[in-house]
Length: 563
Ligand code: GLC
Image 1 (tube, rainbow, N blue to C red):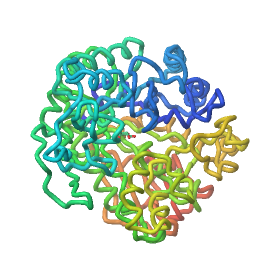
Image 2 (cartoon, helix red, strand yellow):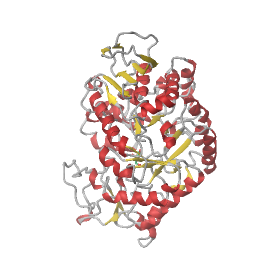
Image 3 (cartoon, rainbow, N blue to C red):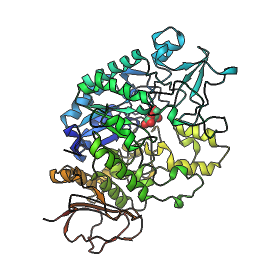
Image 4 (cartoon, protein in one colour):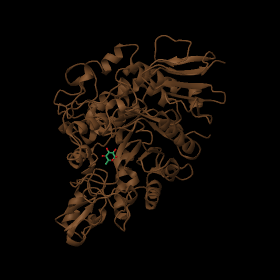
């Protein structure tokens, strides 16, 4: 049936994203761990979550919080022992929760043994696993390319008198996927974890596996160092599809798993079908983030906070573009507001003042669209961005590089304001479990500052309050899994109601608009023209139901037509 995911079980899957460093610390080192996740499986089951994606857990110097893997064979000792993964898988499976792990295929840490061997011996097999190149005249970098973390894509390796390529941090050399032996190594690692019982992979930065091997200079606007950012030099290039086909043929296709690829922002929904088309796409779902920046925050360094506003037309267009492309032609569609690389959705599209109302509106809007929802940990209690007051607080390699690049261009105040709105650390603060010290996250010193609002915003207080975000969230998930609702969500009639409305996000499923979601995305009242008398209210975030359709701040309805 159209709109059904190729793997049946995905149709009723609700995913949850865990940043392991920030979930629950059981050994007091200030970083979360696998035992912490195991302890919270009952909680996740209680919420109705049936798939958890865990950000990287392998050994790593943690320069990019685990995305810099130094050993794929072992669990990061900061997160626990190798056996803890087995326990986690067993315990999760007992509760019908699938575990998907982050697999970083594009690069390793410089501390990986492969890299160490490569730079010791140019004739080693490992030398071919990376991309080394001689400098240009006067030993300048081989090309003028700029990477994702505000630096050149080239770093000099003195041991070889050559440069290595990296599209992220300079401590993370990119792997050379053109090398067959490297590809085989990756297959072995993938198989090892699938054989252990892992239910799939989130494929990190998968769009960058192939580079323009001519390494010719990029043409375009130069930064002060003469560097040009041209993602097409290392994103979504033709060879990738071949590499992923091989990976699928050799590994993924042999297991009943889900693969979720991060394909970045430089690809359209139509182009993404190369990754996950129904016929022969090598992976199942893609994350693209087309809908993650519809408040223009990224381009907002000069703007005051009150000048930032959610552009609902951008959001509606984004979701529709992906629905209309993927519904018919893709293996499935991933639905999300954000992940660990983004500020909190409540701070972006919701409201601190209307925390409860807006968190409920956001979850309702997302959950009843077609696709596999992925919820970022903490959204179920309305966690929001922490307000940092010093540039040093932004403990993240991409933020620190951004600061270095821009500190002479903008005042400190502007940079802090901008980073508070955009930095990745805002979405990575420790989970707020209760109102005890460190929000119940750790008995040690947390690796990132806890949001001071934890005294009120925490799981324990949510559990006590019948009207809490958490309870609403749980009811919403339960409804989403009801068979009649599930079949509407997967039907072919998804459409917006009053598409041009700039304040209200409203849509329906069903030939005769049988399932309707109406959400006011503003912190003020908005009139909306819709006759809801023929509908039963299934979810609503205000205690009284008014007959008029003057929607209160962030008021949301999930309606089902009465028969
Ligand atoms: C992905 C991850 C991000 C990481 C980057 C490099 O974008 O989500 O957190 O920094 O890849 O691995």
